[in-house]
Length: 233
Image 1 (cartoon, helix red, strand yellow):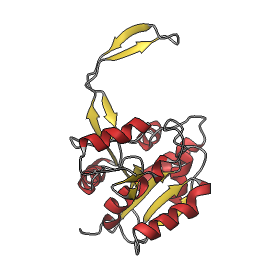
Image 2 (image 1 turned 90 degrees about the vertical axis):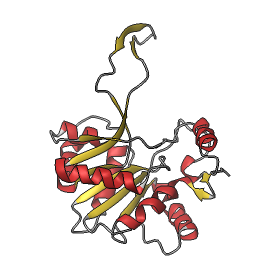
Image 3 (image 1 turned 60 degrees about the horizontal axis):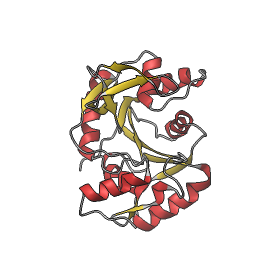
Image 4 (image 1 turned 90 degrees about the horizontal axis):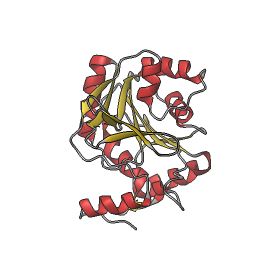
């Protein structure tokens, strides 16, 4: 696999995973490998050595680094401490990128099935537009409710997408967007939203591949059921 010299990659792994339940979901094993290391193993060959950054919870940086050394020996990955909120954690990762980086991919460690090909497709679109994210069109019926749970109306699905990662951006644009976002009292759930609020363009890349995000404990069973060759320990 050819190294993309101007690419940096940030693996966001600093979340608390409160919806998963007891234990750190990113340390659960998928096919014998801790969950967070699947993305590292997949994406590491794409960028220059040392320019893949794993942003971990401050209390887990050393443990994550030790696991990488055990399971992926010789893999030059940098581990940095994250912040309380996701946007702050991404900024910690951005600060660690090497000079000469022009594009950055930001990926959630809880999506272990994302492929190198998907990242490359998003990078190609980001080179054209400044930002690109993988997504699938919404197919379920959507309802808007009152705070009490009463249905108010049905939301049309036209041009609605379920957004995934890796999300790829022009680094200078993303840095500027984060500088603007840091001054706002807003919680951002992805970097596309940071770019949007700063006025930068972000385009959709239709992803037809499975790209499950492990949020609840049941998600582990779903991945295992649909990918029979994979197992959990």
